Amino acid sequence: NALYNQGKYAEAIDIYESILDKGMHSSELYFNLGNANYKLNNIAPSIYYYEKSLLLNPNDKEVKNNLAFAQNMTIDDIEQVPEVGLSKLFKNIVNRASVNTWAYISVSGVFLFVILFLTYHFSQATSNKRSAFIVSLLAIMVSIITFFMALKKDEFERNYQPAIAFAEEIKVKTEPNQRSEESLRLHEGTKVQVIDTLNNWKKIKLANGSTGWVIASDIKNIKDF
Image (tube, rainbow, N blue to C red):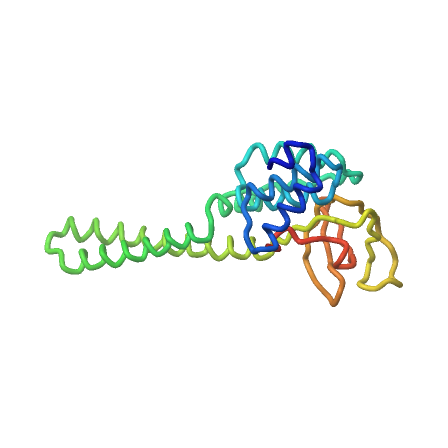
C-alpha cells in the first residue's frame, strides 16, 4: 500500500501478486490489484481483479464504482439482452439467498414438520391436532420449495462461469479450430460467459446472446482462485 501511495504501481502489483502466490487472497487484495492496474491503464487486469473482488464481496459499492470506470476503457460495446417475465422473477427469487441459506431453511422446515407431526400424533385436544396438522403441512411444503431453490441456486452458480478477455484482440470462431469461420472480434477487458470447453478452446457467450469459440489462453476465468 505504501508503494501504491508513492505512485509505484508496478512494484505494488508485484507485492500484491506475491501474496496471491502464497495462497492467500481477499476482496481487499483484489480491489488493490484492480486499482494499481487501473492506474497503469491495464484494462483487462483491472477489470479482472475488480470482478474477483466483487465475487467475494458482492455489495461493495466502491468496487462497483471503480469497475464501472475500468469498463469505460474497453472497446467493445455489447448491449445486454434483458431478461423478462417469469424467468427473471424466478431468478431474482433464487438469487436472494445462498445455497447454504436455502438448505438451512429446508432442513429447519423438516425439523419443524417432525415436531408438529409428533404434536399432532400425541395431542388429545382436537383443536391442537388440527393446528399441528395444518402447520406441519405448511412446514413440509416450505421445506420442499426451499430444497428446490437450493438445487437451482447451486445450478446457477455452477453454470455461472464468467471470464475476462485478456488478449488485445480475439478472433471468435464458429467452431473450435483455427480453420473455421470468424464470427466476430473481441478486445481486452470484455466480459464473457464460458459455456463449454473442448481441448484448448472455450465456447463463450456474450451479454447480447452471441456465442463462439476462442482459444482458452485468450481469456481468464474470474472464479479461478
